[in-house]
Image (cartoon, rainbow, N blue to C red; front, side, top):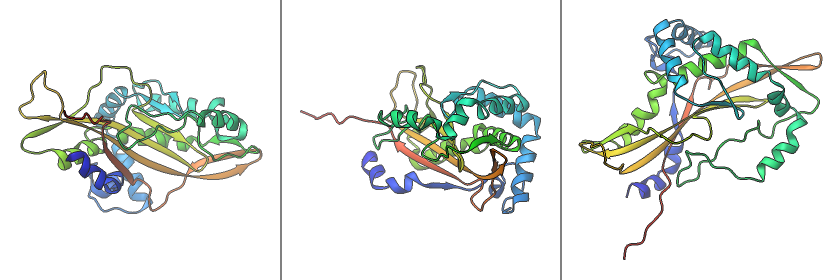
Length: 278
């Protein structure tokens, strides 16, 4: 019955809009701010709070973070996180993926359809290891230092389980929890083959995808009980980029739009096989 209802409401469950934290007042500020200044002030306030940043970094170290397929090393400070990000963002491998040099590799990669650990019965697919179809063989990309800091701050916010990172859990709980069942974050003991947080850098945008799994257990929960059903959730934020041409370089910077900070949450049930009853 639950799977049938999820299929019926697939479009709605795939497109749950999450407003920017500064509109909700998540950071202890009054909600409702719409301007660029409101966004910058809210993010700056959050990233200036030592306790919040310390907890967010602790949460980040529990995740596997990839940037266009490259694993981001764990960080113990905001500065160290930005440094690791900068090294990958300005690496030859990533720059190659932003130019025409990786076109052959992308074609080769596209022949192999890959699915992630978060694939549901609807078929969520893992993003490409490369940057997508956008490329310009005449351009040599260069990441603006300000963009590195922007992404570091966005990662801190996305990973904070006491802040915006907890949105997926609360929405799954509100939709599928109840008096007789408990929603519990899934803890996998197996090896994760790709990032639980994916950063996909393209010429026009940077996409941040945060993946999570949640198990639904009957109450009371006992140690050897099996989950009734599992849900996979992906929260997606798109950071729009703008280009500025300098000599032979194209510098990528963040472009503030009316959708800056908005995220989309997709919730889907896990993969299940129908077993005929005899």
